[in-house]
Length: 484
Image (tube, rainbow, N blue to C red; front, side, top):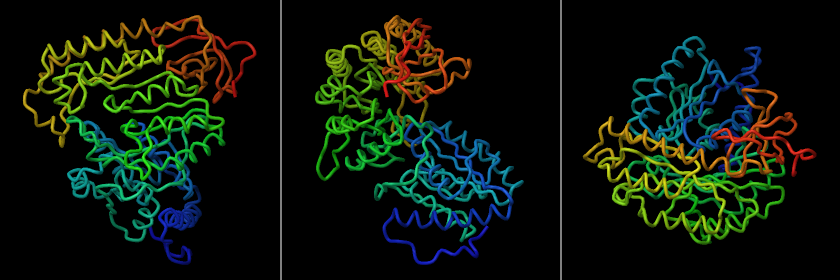
């Protein structure tokens, strides 16, 4: 592949965003020419691994490809395949290597196919070297800090005809106004910050996402206003630790203050955010949540362990007692709050007594649900070097006991709104029964009810007729098709 006979005059602009649109314009002409030669549109498949931050990054990637002129498809039998990778657990890396073996066969059948890898996994030197040596058919490798350069990297690859590797160890700038293609028309993720400064001993994220960088609040508000003008009614504010938002701004602003400004945006109905770190959750934020009419009645508050000793080893910067005190404050100010959490079972050195401390927190807090994880070594983190790694049988026994307790509590809590009329954001046609619609309550619980697809993207009043354990069956209130 080459860029011969593509006539884009002039030099790339100096300003970064203008430069990237310049390269998109060049590539658009190239795609048009190549499509004409093949007699069909060029296709692209984006595969996303990992968290909501990656999902949001992938929306930007898709936006760039669509701007260039690629037709997006779900099938990896495409002209361009890009993997946006996760590296939180080592088995995530193995999964990517396995998929690359499959892509090699596809590329042998389709010589002009291009393959790109980006995301957290690419921030690891050992990974990049392995791909350079063993997966020479990969065309482009870049990381988490320079997604905005995708068009330029594709252009460079087409001209050089060799593997392009562009990894930044840390971010230089935050580039605004990239094209983006949302998965949903009515809800969207909005990055408010990037990176993490916490260095929990089990976590690789600070090493692959870099230090904390907060976006300018004016840029955040402008983006949300544009989204609501385009039909978005719910936003999810994204950051590795949203509670530390604003600390590196020229004019400091707290996360609570940012929420107050976002609440003023006309047309916005619901505000969600993740993930808050307990050590930084302020009284100011709790107060803002208690008074808000738009912040959803759900807070994800990762505890990770109930043992103060283990929490110290994890470098979490709070104790069991401080966490429980924080939960009490939240419940006092926001009485009906739905709390969820993350818990790691089997962290190095965890004793039965430590595990029972975790069980005690679960019983006292009474989470609506929890993401429970069996600890696994993550190369490159301090915890992987710790002694007293817990045996698999012990971990499995504790995990099963924890899960049973969480499910028992969750089953009791979920049914508390049965018989009431609640507002539901209708998200999709039910995949199991097409006569039903599926939506979410403010507290994130699913609701299924009879309706039609015209309701999708609207907030409807639904009577919760029956609790089915972890979701509700409901009935659309007559005359209520939307609050919008």
